Image (tube, rainbow, N blue to C red; front, top):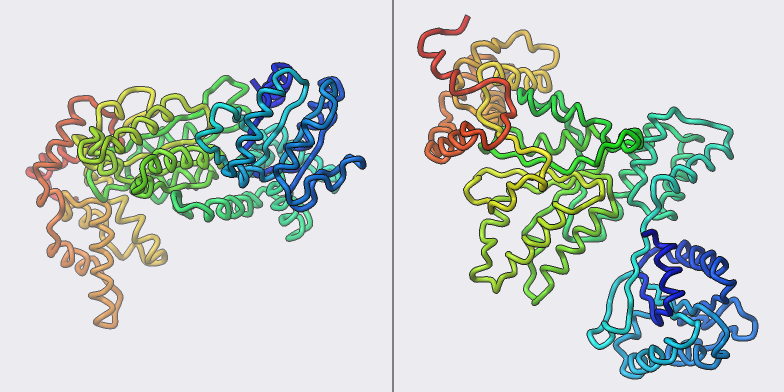
Length: 507
């Protein structure tokens, strides 16, 4: 049921006090005015603390700086006169004893009169003694159709058009912004170069970053990595590329649901976090990083409140990618022992949202220890797919070396023996390969020359890879993946690599 339908129903059902938490004050009031017109031409009275009642010459200024007097006007008007009383920022006065008592008295009176009080506030703040009196109604942000109409209006005023793909990207990027922010960022783009362009998506993401800065729960993570920056993991990359347009209107028309998310399980340093960044960049979506530790607070009930706030913020900025790094460490104690059940309640809220969410929030979670994850997290329906990211094979190590050397020495890649480097670094993860190259660069720099293949091999000989220091843990992960519990991210098997190296050498 849409906001219009639900609000009109509450008016007919004579719900006395309706609480609408929204920062889009102007848009809410315009929508209520339209509904009032459609519902028998009801009168609309608007009050704020500074100017009192506005719009009606008879009552102009009434209740100025007096919230209790603002409620008294509701009683003074004739009982048969239908009306809607919009009280701006009234949440600040709900803790007052007199105001709370007056609201409860009005509730009894208005059940028999065609009048409704609407509390319009940028935040939800309801005292316990008024929880049974107030009815909360969410006002949604502009949908794709409304944003598209706004973009087309601007383009029409300039006599310009955009290609269908560029329009889809622009509209999708604007979703999650208020109407005022959409107009501001589009105006900024026009002021910058006199028209709207496909690359204005970056300006829109910057506007979303401004929204994220207002919270301490999520981080707006800049994603510049590309799919081509990932060495190997071909199965995973193919899976991602097939879903590149899954958030478009064309996908909705086709009947495709929004992609839900991805769980990447595997060994540390194998590219799981890099993949999360590359997904956001490739799909032109904002990347939100959740530090689960920030959800937990000292006050009773505050952790659950922060979890709901995180969900609301993610959905407000949708479509987006929500990246949760090392989720196994965050919910390892989800049985709730030792914290009065706080972790269990936060975990329950989170996985329920993951299973039931309809918003285009793509969750990318990474985990190193599959044994620490609660079984509920692995159930089908939480994620679209679970991928196992293992140690890279010889072919993948060669590709990882090529990616890093192409970034660091783009004009001199041929000077390095990639085949030898890949062969001589068995059991190395992608992160360990990168660190080995950096160490070789230090070696060459200290001798006033460029680093060579031999420098890289010398650096590699000093490294003890995690595959050896955490051999038992890694073996458990590999056995878990080999049992068919997850889809392999790579087409190659690093385990078969070891057997091949026993009998053959590098070409």
